[in-house]
Amino acid sequence: MAAMSGQPDQHAVDVADPVEGALPMPSPLSEVLPHKGIARGTVACLDGMNSVLIAVIAEVTRAGGQVGIVGLPRLGLLSAAEMGADLSRIATVPLPGADPVEVAAVLLDGMDLVVLGAGGLDVAPSRSRVVMGRARKQSSVLLVVGGRWPGAQTHIDTEVLTYRHSPGLADPADIRCGFGRIGGMRLRITVSGRSRRPETVLADLVARPQGVEMVQATTTQHELAVAN
Image 1 (spheres, rainbow, N blue to C red):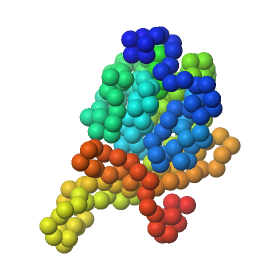
Image 2: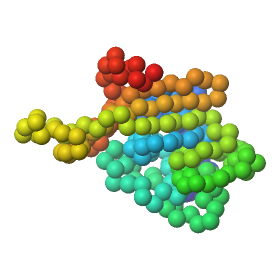
Image 3: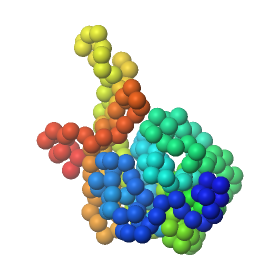
């Protein structure tokens, strides 16, 4: 961790003003988060598509942040690279042993973002407060994936609305449910937190020749009604 960040216990991103006090998030997720990101020193939970998690990792590393990933052995770092992630800024602990929470807590000392695969973890409120205090002291963000964390300040829920076929099919009649090659998907992302109403945004995950990109969806009135 010291080699990755230059000096131990010093984060790669300056936090001199309130905007820089939040880890950057990919658009369009940033549009429904205060200061366009997740506040440092907090805990967030993410449920749903791994594609959103990979986009988050890519955005943080592109901004110069260091990311630790705990307990997610099947997470595809190739996908992260295709979304622009700097793999030299990612440390992985795919099999953390009997106490992944302790491993994540240690990584908070030297990482800007620590991703913890919950995997059925049952964290007591007393222990969660200790870990949250560590994140606050180190100005790090703990992102809990696939589970709940007592006292988490931000919750991000994602779901797939539709899949899209790759362009260039010889015959449009070939576009049938269950056939063809997936060229992207439309996601619904809902962000909620303490003392704030849930906000929803639609995003398109698109496969392009230069890689995979997540962009703001061009919504119809029907889709807006569904999202709300």
